[in-house]
Length: 307
Ligand code: OXD
Image (cartoon, rainbow, N blue to C red; front, side):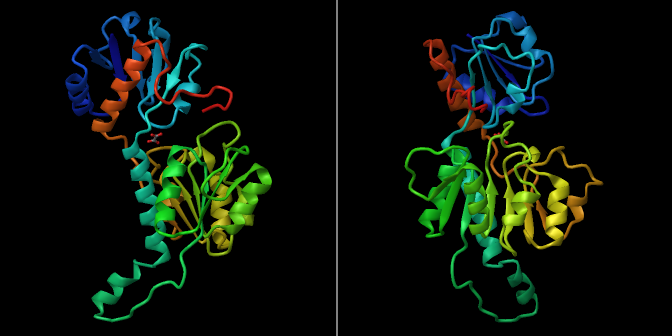
């Protein structure tokens, strides 16, 4: 079986080496050294170049190299019936949970004050009298893992998803009313949603108006979830007080963008949770084996939901 890895600008040496150890029978190619494009059976891609999928006429399945699949679903060359998968392993989900715990508890406990006190040799003990309320927009793999992490720390956590679902171990909201209820309840409102036509620009002035004064917005979904001008306006009204942003409509964020120097915006460069080569190699091999056995790739896209 010929496996193609295509994620322009990334170094894949560690990933390819590990796949070679796990599955020596696979013929692994790294874009742009595709060889005969029609012979490729399985492609793992991240922001692949336009036109690539049109050339891979023998594909049996394709997978995103990460959790998001919008770069694939928005590709007009994606054959309509081609099975599409994604890579979301326990490490990726745990790292996202760790990022959220660090950002939220660091801010809630105001840990940034103490270095100032230390410089002045000031002894000023302080801790908040209660934990924050954390609202998660999205309750898929990442949302569930984050919810578990907050529950383990006895931090009240609730989530929202687009439609009503099965029983969950935390309060679960759905629909527009549920979205507004969760926004009004949360001290920290976290966007972990997949990007679809239903979730694009969901972080807008209507939602900010429902947030508590002094609350914090965290976006680790996609830049396109956020209406940037609405956020700038909302920050000037302290609702939210702070935005912690890991993803942007344009990445890298252009140097002239107002977010860089805004006092109420904290930026991390799309690294809340990064796909690690060791985990990716295991998931890719597992996905390939499934396809070889005539099954869908790992974490297949549910076309009716758009993610
Ligand atoms: C992903 C990402 O979707 O890194 O995996 O954003």
